[in-house]
Image 1 (cartoon, rainbow, N blue to C red):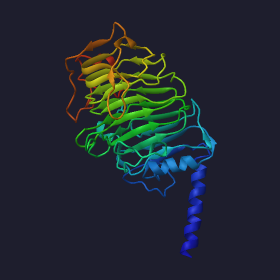
Image 2: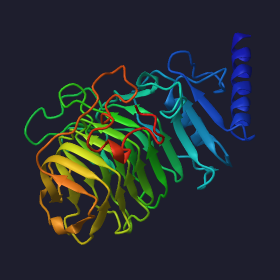
Image 3: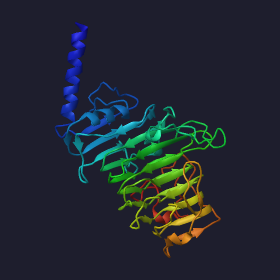
Image 4: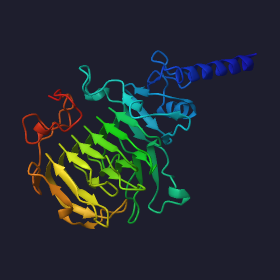
Length: 366
């Protein structure tokens, strides 16, 4: 009798899930503290894991926008969370959005409200089925569909020893898109945090394809911030704007496949190892405007990869507008009081703060 009841309950649950994802009630709610992955996923009955939300979406049939809301809490990923819906179709105006329940511009927001994503899965990813020769890798959130927004999350790396010996780099990629023909991925108002001793954030965003836009994010002590990875043709409609890069011990931007229409503006980069890494052939030039780069070891490199940052590149491939400040030495003033709303942002009134780089799209960071 219990078995029959259990089967009926399971069937009813899946029927309700299908209703939720097919009757224009296209919101899923996740709460790491009070949720349960056997719940329907409504606000009153949230799921517990992002993995479960992705699994349900990947099995759904239909079209239209879907928003996944993450409440405050810690979301440990013990396996890659892949969004790859085959039978659900999004568009530019009907997107998949993965976002915090409370966003930085909301009046009740503070840094502690951000959902925390941390990767704890084994480093056993095998690129193209081959054994990784550098010590092991893993993906955190993998996006394999077009028209996606990721918003308002605090994203950590993975607690490993990154360089156990020469020639090895153990690494986690928190956000990845591999599809070379995919389009329109926006990552906004996210805080990427790492520490090369405790929890290395090897490479915050590794994305293939077209239409990659990263805006109003903070990259704090990550190794590398953004890599425009493989694409079947030069990646058009890509933008990096209103971001704050602090203390990258790798490089801020790798423009390997970005096309010449790439837009870089209102960004602040300070205390970085390498500012920019070009593709090895150095064929493409990029225009930069209204930004500040202060404190770096190398301005422009080319080539490189997980094992290193390449070699010195041609600085003439970066076209700096007159409103761009470039200084090899120097520092900027960062708010280090964790009780402040603008924690890990430039202190208001100090150099660079007028550019609006950081999590806030409105003037609420003070």
